[in-house]
Image (cartoon, rainbow over all chains, first blue to last red; front, side, top):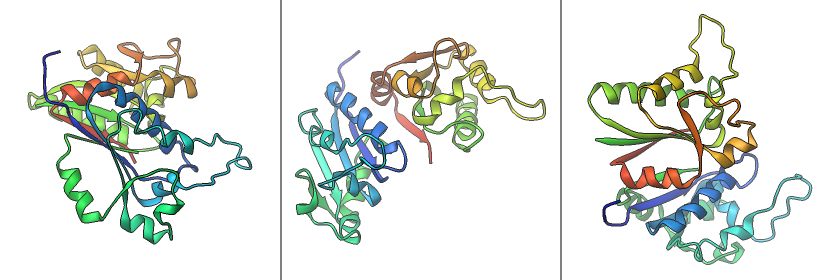
Length: 123
Length: 118
């Protein structure tokens, strides 16, 4: 393939970690894309902020608990990791409640960042 | 323009698959290029040839297969397909099962990646 500038690709995680498979299968995509030397961002908004909450226990749901994998995003080449400020506040969460270090951005800043992407992938 | 297509929802239950199909038809009619269609999440179930549809309704997997016969690349995610019982044995003609890296390639080589989902 001919050389071209890295694509700006943003994963827009919107859904709760459990209740549907979107969060989990979305995470699988993010991990693969990290290997492709593109400019990857992952944003967590709406109920997806719960994906990053500490102390998750899915034993009574009978499904896999995968929140620890999000901590690997940085190692997998996901340079930018954002949480939407409003989504976090509406759910009574602070950075101390989250399993990893993320940048907190307000909705307006996030919309601007989305406008600068080449690709948005919603999950 | 080069369009890559991502289909995230299964057939009949959700409009996403129909919308993707009609978008592709319209784009091709206008002379645009479709770099590929990637089926992910429940979208992989669009590609089973075991569908048996009443004659008065559209046959979604047959329609996708016909699009594939015209040269549109149809790629079904292997991990998502395995979860949902979509194996090479039941896969429609003119589609292939491949890895998520193919979606990455679509994102890189297309001018726009259009997602049809919920």
